[in-house]
Length: 125
Image (cartoon, rainbow, N blue to C red; front, side, top):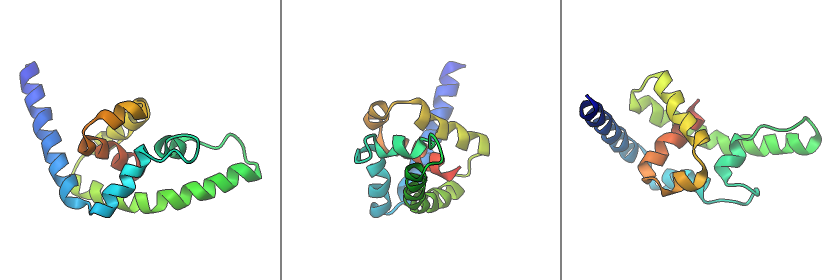
């Protein structure tokens, strides 16, 4: 039974990887890759984007505006890719939660296409 499940999940992973690789331009891949590299905000960009503001002071609201400006193009990329993946909303949320659950250094050591699923579903929701 376990081998059957491993085989099925392996096939699904390969299917998703193929779709993602075909759906993204090199520029889009670089944009998403920056989420795991850029630390200009004091955190990795992916971590910074996931954080909610601690309060509603001017500094926090400026950060929210900046966050929106970064998320807007990422959302468009994610929206296009998610439509092509043909996965359920529940699976979309599951992959999105993986980007929150795993630390950046663990995600950074994963296969880039696998990471992509986490990023796309994080911003697509």
